[in-house]
Image (cartoon, rainbow, N blue to C red; front, top):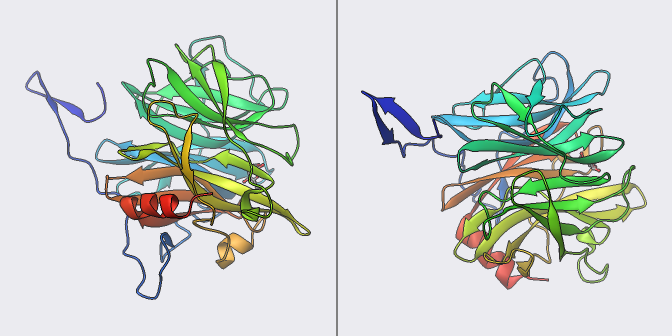
Length: 336
Ligand code: BMA
């Protein structure tokens, strides 16, 4: 039965009741368009017994609360994805065992590792994308109806690719996915592309969406960029939170920006932030297994408020808040 529907006396009734998204008002001393949850990080590195770190994870409304797909690296630093559940989007029960996939629209595909999941509901089920180890990183796809049983489908692309993010509805009758062609290492380059599929199996019509910025115009996103959250549909366009990277003498620094993509043709960027929305500044973002990383993988919106979930320093999970229209206005007024 689709999300939000319940069986009552043999009559299917559409339920519109959904848990409120996590939110906290802007601190009084802040003039920023987005701000951090005061109790960040919401998930610590040792949240489940096996974990070395939990970060770069995605959440979605589910039943009367939320479900999530979490990247948990274990103490052998093997990367895998785990399902989790929450009533309020802040306090999470994460399964102690990783997701076991069943074969979906193809035979079982080998998977050396899984990391950086995204999740979205399309039509009748939840779709998960992640960075799948198949002779190097590429985009894995699976679906679930209940976050108990998962069906793994064809990889979307040849290696090497990362940051595969599905749109939450078909566009012109096709599934649409943002991704970032990359290399087998820590990829010192990267732009965002869009691809389409009629069936979640065969992907094509690859178009470039967004490239890195010239250093002198917006250096925080001058080395590589990658899609972050599932895009949010607004009257001003698809609102997409993405990460941007600068290579410094001390390594990569990951920050978060946002873009508005055309509703009908999302390969067209309408506006895109020149200043970042969030950059590593708090201790849990500056220090961890990989210092100086803010890596958004999900955004919840109730049409007015927004909560972005991000990995911090490749170690923990944090949330940042904002008002949707303020963020949109900010992107337009501060566009690259
Ligand atoms: C990227 C991915 C992410 C990670 C980031 C910073 O290449 O591996 O999982 O958060 O680097 O280390």
